[in-house]
Length: 142
Image (cartoon, rainbow, N blue to C red):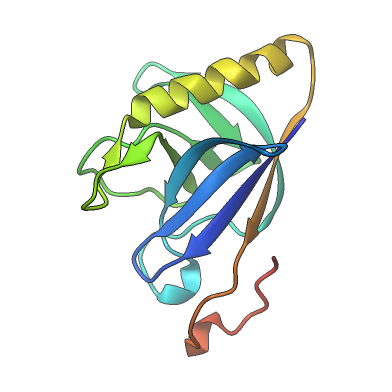
């Protein structure tokens, strides 16, 4: 099973939509691309294996390859490097809504595949950066 994350880069945040086949599962928020010069950054485009992970501190999350994770966005907290935060919807001012619900629904959907022993992958693709920023002139795959 392969999920596809379509993302758009912005200077302060990376926004996306997570799909299974043609069905959108949720919206996503991530830190900006590394070339924007921020302290935190998003995962590079590519294909990653997803696995469930659990900690006493944060509960259930989804591990992305060796370095990333899909987890719940906790309000005003800072976006962590290589983390993807599912979002159900947004307010008019851009505030994310129902992030915990979005994560729980995603885990519930993927849990069926993991129980059957299926490999679950995440493919990350992006649109090009809408303006030229010297540090962002590296090839962006779409």
